[in-house]
Length: 503
Image (cartoon, rainbow, N blue to C red; front, side, top):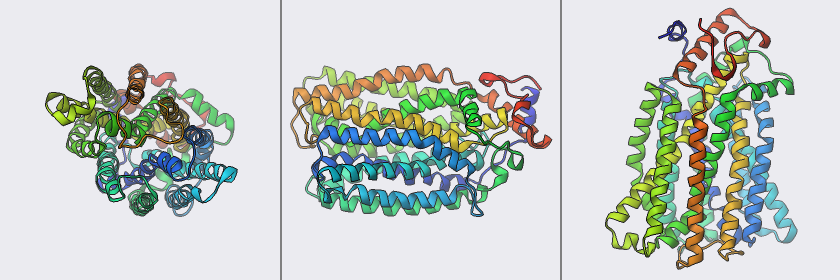
């Protein structure tokens, strides 16, 4: 162990376990809206009457706009502070905004013509703004919550339980096996009324609990160098952060690709085509969600233990490789069976193998989405060590910028594929029969992510923040706090690309 690593052992501030658990609910509160957003295409085409390509383009435009304004949101967040804290007021106000945005979006059927499209786009943009504020808090507050490398990865365990399992797994089962059958196996007005009330009610409760979790750490002494933090004033200052922070550049691009894949694979149109049509049973999507609960818990514990023993980069890399292998297995099964609709009717080896592969894809694909929130905290600390600045809001919204631009492609890609199948005015329903066009479209939806997993593996190998580097980062921050405020140009401790001199 180097001298700088030894000095860093006393440089950590910790959170209580219940604080980490409760604060992770902020991500669950926003993920509820992300889950609900996945059903928007069915509302927009089936109830509001939009054409398929119009919906996909409007959704893509709203997400792109969201990405473009995200850096501004980050600047506002970094400069925002009140007697109630930096993060808690933003969490509460933005969640109330999310309630209003969904009430606007899912009532657009009351308009017609050009007014309908304009109101829909305005509602989408408003939703993206308030969503970005609350979602960015999850990343921006992580450095204040804890900087202990043994604690930071624990966030992903709680996030997996509450978000990946509680919302996306249990939520999918609830919708496909309980809510949709209760409303005649259709995404009708009654379905959306009940569905939205559940989302809005649960989300505000989770937000309040998350505010309790961050309360003790939502104060200046946990923000960067505390009172000695170098002030970030001009656009030139913010540009220097983006330009000089290589870990931010690498992980923002990787996170964007992961978010695109998550949006694509998690979209209800994708699930309807894969399970409802290609495999012949939409209820399977909910059952699969339940099957993944135990493996998800076990694997996230193993990956988190790896992260605490080694580093976050190692667990991120393994999850990317495992997700790619799982997806490749699914594609191979579907391509080489004569009739995919009979895979689960006949049972046997292929049904078991496909189940294992799909669970593997969902679990290993979700883990990088969760762990990137913690890795963003490492990047924020790296920047504090490098320049003396605390700009976790900007760093969080840089991730949002890149993943918004990338994920804006998801509805567009899905819309183009679905339209290419011949569905120009509505998305396929779960009760439709399998056709060559639907099978080809479904396979294209699976093939696209395969190429991206190869790119992800290349990118994460370039990420420089490993265990040794982060120990040196925390030692540098502690030394700067002890020495008092320094100016950005006096930056002696951290060199380019995460390489530091010996102390």
